[in-house]
Image 1: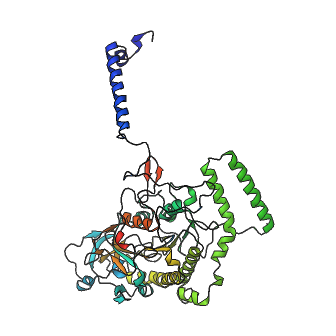
Image 2: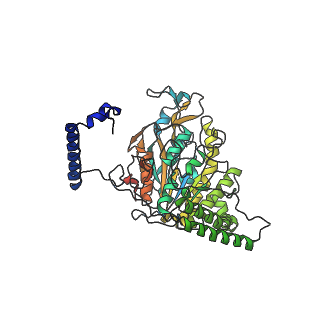
Image 3: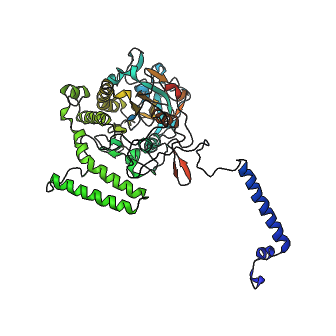
Length: 501
């Protein structure tokens, strides 16, 4: 610089010989220290690490075939998973969590009951709206609300001390299905298919069977891919509504349709050769090719005409409400998809097109005697038949079944005297099938079913356990996103070893 006066004071100070030598000396010492630390292995690693300090296990995904089957992290009996999800919050104290104290204190308001809960002022303690009876060889107490599922309790593994972080339905659904109350995170099914792919290359790896009444409150977020590649989002359809644009136009013959598909395949392959490292392009091509295969595979799996009359009767397709019949068909579809090797099937019982209110889902803030009975009539027999059918066919030997809801309901009534409010501090879910104990109950809520008391289980723990049952390490199954190693269980969660077979 010809004119030192143009420099700042700091800049001019660096031109001083003494300052320059001192700064250079310190820098050299810093480099030497860094070299010594690196030699001793004491510097932070530049390799990705999980919160627990271990290396992530990233699936080896071929971008040209993202649905190819992949090995699990460790050997596990569960190869597929069926999630039966009941939006709206099923009342645990009226179904599976027997609390005699509610009958003793019926109509009273003992100390400790809050004055206000999610929807307003509270009322008095209310005994179960349906009688409880011992069931099966285990003598498990289950209410008369669900008589068909009650017959199978010896096959179930109940978790009675479930808790969640929210008492609002959208956030509750998000939390249970994605591990976060906010939107934009991958669903459980997306994580599983991202890790494992699927054995059937003719059908989607992850199918979401929506309730006949429509989507749940959080909609497609319940089975979305979030920031995972789009290939791993759930494909949603049900027995009444197949995927859109599946049928070939009438003016196009089957032969011409095949020729068109073959030409597109050659053009796509040629285009992909120019961009061999473009995973997004490869993923889109794979998605389109799967859509082409689904034109024949989906109609076949949705065709229930080959089901026997005894099967249709067992599932309750006829003889009940129209909604029960439609849900029963969805249950048969779920079984057929599992038989075909679909990795993840999520079956919804309940929707939320107009707020629920116990009419379209289990959200019984008023007249719970009527509204819960309405939902149970739809859900009980078909679901029980589905589980019995899967057991008889040997599908439970390699399929994990999850029955879940987003939170429970209060042991006391709302001020209207006919409904129960949301309860995030205690609720019940159950598991059955591959890898879990049979005829077992884990955890307890307090004497009222108000708060989880023994072996409290968070949603993080629940999801960690489900991934473990699928042969996946919940701490090491991650995806690098926005500077973080993201995972289904965030930075929390422990496997509930006590429920493992």
